[in-house]
Image (cartoon, rainbow, N blue to C red; front, top):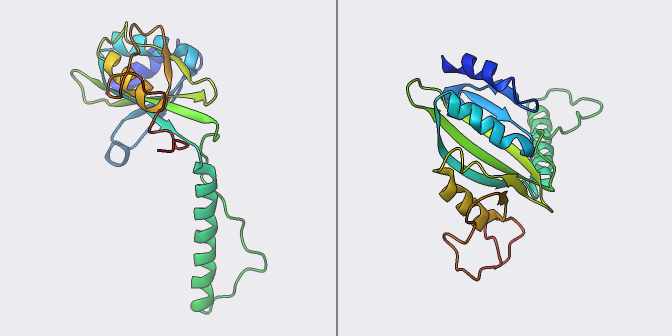
Length: 187
């Protein structure tokens, strides 16, 4: 599989953290997390290894921590109610509700999806940026097809791709001063 060769090649990117994923459940084989400053270096490795870009998009993590904590508490309460209904003894102290690990609320995440030309090997690269200054270097010089995706992500999330040749609005009006996929956007 191409994944092993990519892991070795990606070792040159110091911030890269690579993990394997179950393709049937996630839709990709490898997940790579890199620091914003090393996005272009990681993209160059993927290009040299024969991968092409499929998509670039953003994720706004605003409010996710509170939602995850609320869901964990509801699950703990449901488990306690089920135990009581079945006659099982409730624990003296209920287990603390544990929320899944998610990024800090003051972050955006830029998600890049890659695929290989010859071997089935899908890769997702994730980059987290601070919400107050959401900047990531462009990869449009390495992957010209990323140009459109980066413009769309800039339109909807306000993430700036530094070095991009033209971040003018692609889908929004030219005078738009808003980013409609931010969770704090109000119409």
